[in-house]
Figure 1 (cartoon, helix red, strand yellow):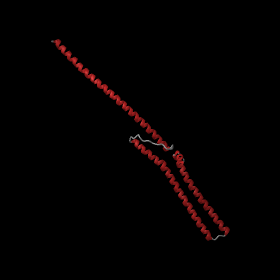
Figure 2 (cartoon, rainbow, N blue to C red):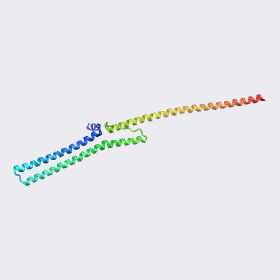
Figure 3 (cartoon, rainbow, N blue to C red):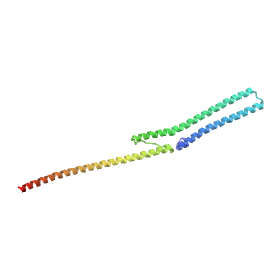
Figure 4 (cartoon, rainbow, N blue to C red):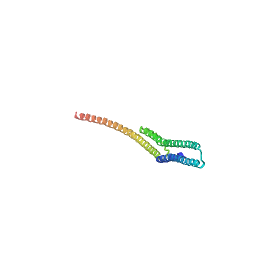
Length: 195
């Protein structure tokens, strides 16, 4: 459910959420570390003044405090690294991978392969890009179908015209033959009458 919700958001919103989460985690851990340092310093000062604690015991407590502080700083650094990885994962998975698929489909379409089927999984910027590509492919398929239909119609019309021209040619040939026969007959009649 969270995945489908996250895919439905815009790219800028996804980046903002990832960045805000990283900053929140870092700030929270930093605030916890500062609070612990403040409380531990106050606690050690209060204990040493109130109970006249031996400085050796106090130095051991300070060592424990230092260790705790380093652990907190380590957790904070780990949290920052994890949040940075999360942001990188978001950008790589959502933006780069999706754009790579779009580029592959466009290259195949540019090579003339209109059989590409693009599935739209989100309604954010990249999802809108995929939707537009899908509409372009559908229009190109429709246009290619219309061109094929016109080509078939033109081929059929050309065949009909070729048949008609052949018939006209045969008819003209017949008329030429008949005209030559009439001309020969007229010449023979004129020679016969002239004799």
